[in-house]
Length: 539
Image (cartoon, rainbow, N blue to C red; front, side):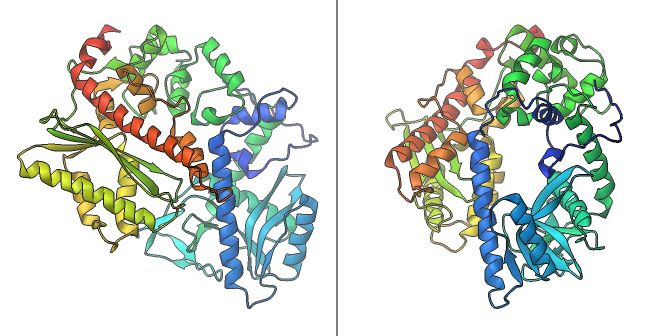
């Protein structure tokens, strides 16, 4: 699959950032070896949104840290944005002056080792500095599972923290190791072997022991240098990153032309399949042996069916003779809309009373248009919960069965639990125990899980992939989770403070279509799928 050559000892190494050390190796090769090829290098909207959110988070953390040290002149120094050479000079000047904290630091490029980069924060320890990165995801969670050390934001003071558990991210560790090597090159490193990360909650610094990671980092850097220099060849393989990669316009057709096995199975499975000699979709479709060594992520028989379905152009395959999903007298479909990590601003519902044909099937949204985060989110959540509880109780009082449905409950459950926790004590907000009891009850049904139990899905199990097979279509041609994030920004005036009523209506229509799609899909599972969808044995 790959050919490895030694880099010539006098070769100038490509300058790599920490971003180059993780993710698709083939993208790295294309970025460095095909710079003159014209591709649309503009960011996918979802990537743009994440970058903007990360910038807002970094600015907020900088403001907090600056506020902590307001009465300590020279302790907290923020390097001004500008040309990299000026930022490096300002960083070195702040360090030479003994600044306790240096924000927006840029470090001297290590051309001999082929690396460059900067750290959101440098924390002074003794005569040197440790790198601290600011990331827009959580780096710890409540609960004392395992050993974790944290430091308060106002000083570098690592200590065991029994109240938290680590959420480790390989990219974070690689970046901290990368920055440690750059600090060593600049003569600014400490001998502690430590680094830190400030996550989304920004309430402490999670401390990382980087010593065990350094050999792996050095190996990764060497391999990535070989790829970027063309000494290590790569081939395309479909992975999650492909969805937003500008090179997909080139790699996608190449993979289809080669009938590459990664078109039907995930990245790790594709690697294992290739190691076992299953290079193409056809190789996998014709395979009758046991699972290869190290196979993970599902039954090999399902992978074979996926390959056979792809070869025949089949979009959905039945696992079972008669597909089923739980049904009830009173059914409520639920779909939640959130904005990143800021909160859930909309709970959309669609009620169907199967015992009373005169009762209209009605969409009802519970929403706040105050920009998140806002306490008004607690108000809209409380109203949603009160309405849902009233329908459950009314059904029980009249001897009717009740079920509420969502598509992939992990998202809904996260915000059900999170809302009950964050807004505890507000009028109408349920207790955490009430929410947990509902989630664990048979009245909360995940249609996504039902799809997985009943079908094998060659094109994925997302609602936008499966509901059209049941005959449902969205009114908005751009409907999708990432698109709705952009609509929300405009709807509440994130950019300029001017709300857009038209985008609010667009979001509500999209949410309404989502709950209708869930209803149509689950009804189709029990009423029509058996006759319309090919069974796996027929492939």
